[in-house]
Length: 329
Image (cartoon, rainbow, N blue to C red; front, top):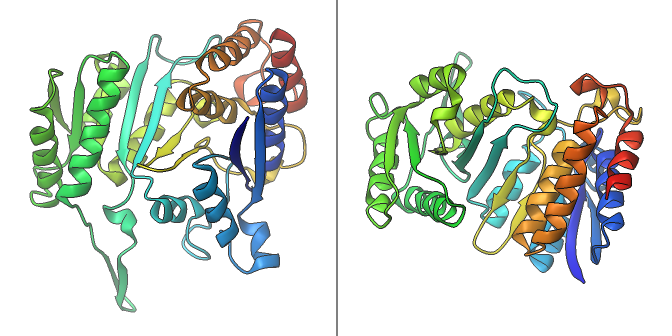
């Protein structure tokens, strides 16, 4: 029996969480879910979007599955996702991006893994208002964090039989900060037999939309990683099918990367695929590889049979799609 934290967010978060729980239960997995809530709705009752009880639960159970949480743009509370990563030192953001069956895309055979540093860069939130007409942000890059994420990328590549790692920076302009990230990747790469390739982030984006099949594992600082990982999601069908994981030395949080979609919340229209793909990655992480394969196979067979939600061009509701997957289990 596994003890795992489930963080139900807001918007469509609760309904896609329920969908995934139903599928995992049907697969016969023995999981004791420690259900926690976070996000905009929690502020009204507890005053903060991420109560201490949520952090305590993840620290106790070591592993969490999380659904989307709304982040206000330009105002309001700080991102719950960023806070979780900081508080739990989830330094590695892992985004495997590959084609799903019968999901229409511009490219075939895409298989890219984005490894993003998760704790510093501009996302450290070091900002200040100089005056009414000027604000500034500090881009902080450290050797320790850069070498740590580079090691994660190479270890992942070796373990998963990948062919090479490409480090992505803008070191021609940000010579000190991105230069340090690049130097760190070069240093770490000397300990591995895998090749390290280098590319500037603007060229990388162009190359991704021209020929994504040329890439394998991408290693990026925080901001570029955030942008490029969403670009890669677009290559395989959009955020509705994109999985994500935030991994540290002691804890791991698995989550879909799409938003909370409050405009369709409670209407049984949500697509649970990204949440389910994240749960499948979580099962592999805890060693339940056979269960992960079974659930993934059931999902893929469902898509092959052209059973899809509206965002993928289908006509099924969230609950209908869920039942179809369970049937194929």
